[in-house]
Length: 339
Image (tube, rainbow, N blue to C red):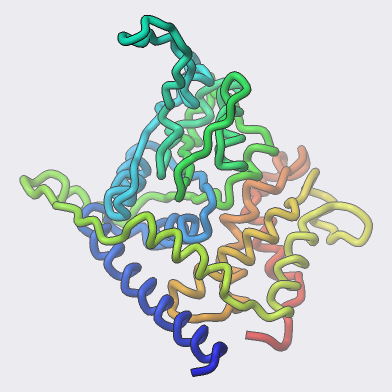
């Protein structure tokens, strides 16, 4: 067997393994989570890419339950931090303490790891803590390491931050700066269930039924899937479309009129990177080893909505960021060829 054919066969087997794992994950999630298919898909894509995501929604929509259940299914170490105004950076990263060696009587500094040293970290209501504490997560999110008192400690892998925000209680909150928001691949919006789904949720959660969650995917599997995502090919026309979509969100010479009118700052280059990577992951979840225009378009909202900074004119006219993304999808030319 030649080398090329061997690589093709290995990739085909890896894709089949990922799809089997995806079906198992969905089966386990359905024991606890009712509906919310798009939210589940976006969280899984985030894990496959190896990126962090923000989940925004009002209380009671199972944001925390979804993340805890996902960690159990993936057999990953899970930690939760409830962000509050009095939370300190050391409460996240850990700190040095003085311990005495009982054998020698000598005292030495010992680093006690904080909850950030996990595989999946739930940063609950991240906008309720001051910027200094929010920033304690930045190095871990970007560099996969933590530096305390000049000493650097590597994180375990895989490592994901899944943060939640409550969009309706803004009093006493500290909105995340754009530089920190840009480090989250997705801003996932979780909505109310339909009437039938809400009825089913109420029926299931008010009985004696206690579902048992099976661990179906290991951390090594997740790392293998992340490498597979990187190997998925993408046509030049599709990747250029992703770049064009992001660049069109920026005001300036040659920008669309509605962008000039409503946008102060557009999406960063990181948005194009995440559009491509998340498009690759979505293709795999749908059993394809190539990225389509539809993959890019379906993920434009969660990738771009938190990277567009609107101005006073947009706010006065009640123009949302999703509306701007919708218009961009309408006016940016779609390639005539490509997958």
